[in-house]
Amino acid sequence: MTEPSDIAVPESIRQAALAVRANAYVPYSAHPVGAVLVGASGQTYVGCNVESANYKGLCAEASAIAALVSNGEQRIREIYVIGPGEHLCTPCGDCRQRIREFATPETTIVVLDGDGQPLKRYTMDTLLPDSFGPENLAKRSGMR
Picture: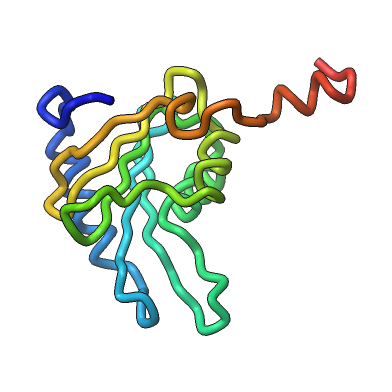
């Protein structure tokens, strides 16, 4: 585990996380979440959670990944996730797999507290150990 004091979060990322979390549509859970993703190009993409009455909403991480892919990128350099309080608001299981789909071994995942200060940093291996990804499918099907 990386101590919060060892994690540097650029002020522009912190401000983007706070701003996008403020846009979250959460009439059912009242639990706004924001995500700021840095693509391989260095471009920043943001996303917030969007709930719906059928409880099949969109997570903040999924929203940011959709923006990444919609803009022609497919690799995540870093992703920052911010929830509403002082507790860890880590990506859900579905989002861990979504992040894994577009991550590299160097991708970092940083969880911020409600004020945008770092709580913990993960690598993909610590966030989703022994994960299954695109390269597993290629090996399994004989593709390369």
